[in-house]
Length: 266
Image (cartoon, rainbow, N blue to C red; front, side, top):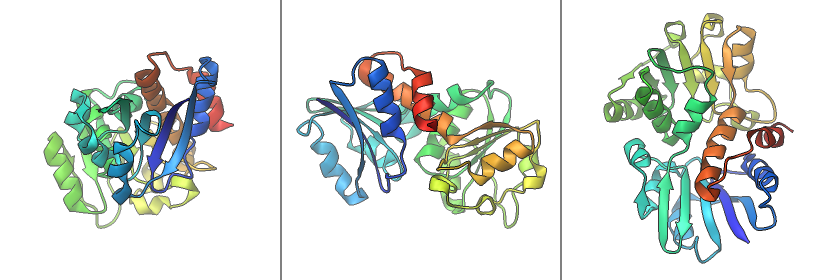
């Protein structure tokens, strides 16, 4: 059995196992491959990654809070993962562990149109934010970053030559064509839109809103954006797109997007 997994802390909310196992069945690989979710505390990650080959793993995804650490633990990395400074996908070939970042191409694939020339606001400064900022800037967007800890936003902006926004009150959301939430606010159904310092009244049909968080119901940000008539990409679609990229890395097969969507939305 070829093992795959998503590693996180916490990770019980993840729909990646249902999605990836459905994809593996659709590809006729279900009897040889299995995908699971494993809770790994940060201090345990180095030992866990070192033992991947011995435990029968051919690949793993990384989610909060492991994406930046995963890059450091890999023996080699793609140019994209190096440029972003974070990895959400590891491939195992004996003692060689290769790092890739599929969050970046997954985000661009999830958008309904190119972000080139658009003003984008990224909320957050963690591993997912690094991928989003890099992907958007690489695609030609004008990117600004907000994070509750301003110093982290400033450090990220410096890495990618982006701008930062500070907000004692509400963020100037109306100034942006595209807003991407990469924080955990709303993950698992918790969190309130007010924590993102966004004013619901200024969202409009001219904007696109991407929320990487997801839970058992729509996040407050997604529901509010829909009510405002904005173009909405929810966390499940982003999950499907990055998961499809990871599956291609591991299996060298085209991912069955419809089967993956049915699994995460079922």
